[in-house]
Length: 359
Image (cartoon, rainbow, N blue to C red; front, side, top):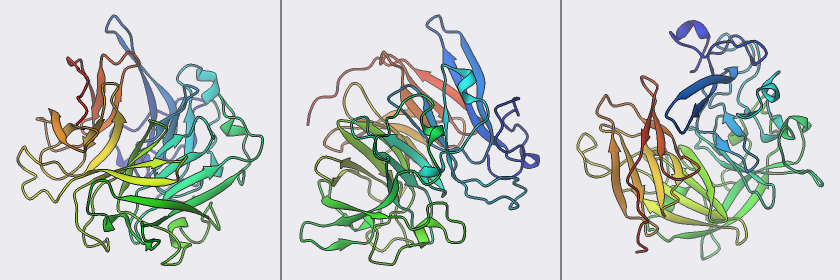
């Protein structure tokens, strides 16, 4: 929900003690699904703007991301936006007096994952003109993650960095749209962000043309297999490389490599079933491969991708052309949950599921 509350019929309720900016319409709710099928929902945070993919943590909390960077005084806002907030689904008291994790930077956040071994945070930026960036936050020496620890960080704690890719010949890669084959591998370096709170210049505009690598609509992420799966939704005229309708990359922090795992060609008939376009939210299936929420043109799907990059259908939105979001499996792996953004409903898909063969 972007912009002032007056624009929205059903803004997130301003629950006492859980409001960041009373002028903003967005927020994050927690949905509890019990084994007997009963459901409860409650507000985790309110008064935020354009909450997007976000991400879970290894210590059981949720990081909700604002895909909007309005400053106080813009679009009716009374506080600055463009931050990440932590929501604890198990301890409601921990969510009182919401505080942004300013150390993660202020920009149009999409998704975030935490490396449970090294403590690094990886964050995507869904932005254009110029295209967005993939970020890494390196914690300060001695910092240990855990419940409530992020809100104790100083605004300038750690180091925020943007990625810079190099191809197999040692050449700088300006944009991920340059990759045209599954299996493409880039080396990754990290460049410090000059001003992470972007008071005068947006973060992505603080770099010269040969300093960082960009991509159009860097979207969902998921941590699995020792690294981060990262989505770039599409590339068209705003990107310097080849047009495509979606990429999924895997970043290996140990090798510092980025590998193209899924590549969707341009979908010429998005109003028909068949090819997919516009991958957005993503999760890694306990049965192998990926499950991806489509936010493209025409018909909207949930679809899977095998380890070799082959795609297959799981579900289709027959209500309207609204995107799927929030795709995640239950802890026992029996149920796949997903949401339809408009009219704002959640569905539970119980399978049956089976392990994908390696091919």
